[in-house]
Image 1 (cartoon, rainbow, N blue to C red):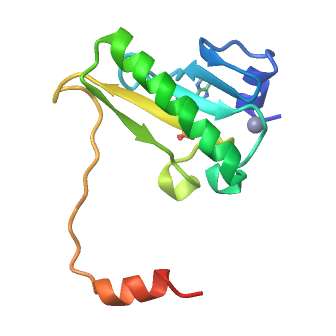
Image 2: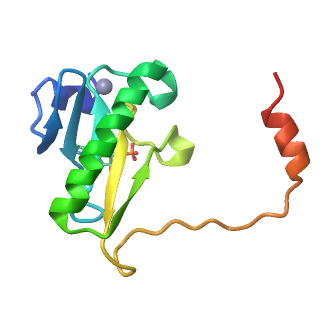
Image 3: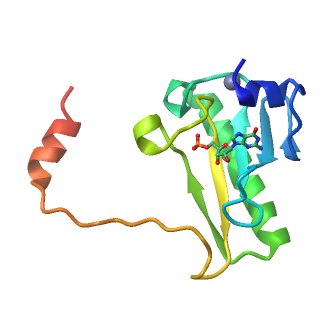
Length: 131
Ligand code: 5GP
Ligand code: ZN
């Protein structure tokens, strides 16, 4: 069983923020910022691409509800919603999950950098849209 399946099964403790029949939200052990929360399906999928679309839709409804509660009650000024998919993108636990990372000010410990690249947009569009 993966570590999140162990938490879902109650074999390993988790700080529960929300739970229903299909989904569980717990505090991330790393607390990148105060209130950093993970929302996951109780059913094991390696990543969100493996989930049926309707279940992923309900997961994101749960993320929205949970993020609103976290931001409001933690008095955050906003949040980042993050899904790491596969090792190259930083996924370390191979059980689908969504990060809710509350943001407080410009000095908190989260940083994303989007570096511009001069690439051929027409070629990329064609490649993505091929059948
Ligand atoms: P990923 O890098 O796969 O997107 O995120 C996995 C997250 O799970 C990490 O932020 C890490 O801190 C968190 N994590 C790993 N093991 C545990 C655990 O046993 N309990 C909790 N609550 N979080 C965990
Ligand atoms: Zn699992």
